[in-house]
Image (cartoon, rainbow over all chains, first blue to last red; front, side):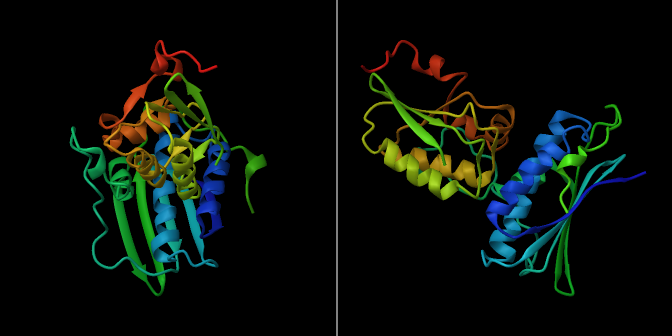
Length: 158
Length: 114
């Protein structure tokens, strides 16, 4: 049976994403099967949510993002919805990992977001319909790890 | 963004005291690093022991901080937490920075300035 771990709406700003991830880390401390799942989740959510802030809402305040996390036997499913500008065409691939020996002045300062998402998830899907954009993906979870305990209730957000 | 600076001989050590270097603080981090390293002639070590999360914006800001050092100088990093280490490994940025287990290891025999 899939278990909904998180269902929340957050304001579309970098600060709000940062605070939400800090809260989620505590809230899900005992709910995730392996410590590595938490790390991957925080990285993927950080990139995906900040993409919405930066590109869908283009830094304009007032937007919101709906986030839902579901734990299934197949992994941790992430569902992110917004009503900002859609991504046109295919999802970006993101920058390839660096080649060794690159000169300091030639190093990229960005572009790693999508490649991190792609490296850490599978079943990455995006659709934009009726003004709503929806990104879904799954963080694989090792099926041999013990079943999760309950999330910490004191940190539930309205 | 809480960054503090110490000088050990000709080595500058910058300690990041916030738990996150992310999109919310990336620009501030880059600007503070520019101020703190402007007069650094020798090595610069960034101690990340208290940082438990960076995202791609934070990573970009650390890269930018290294470029600001000028003359192709490599920024050195110390005490990466598991998640920070993971971001550096996944993007292969671990091949670009000099990474020490701790600041003490990075300092080697450089003694504190009096």
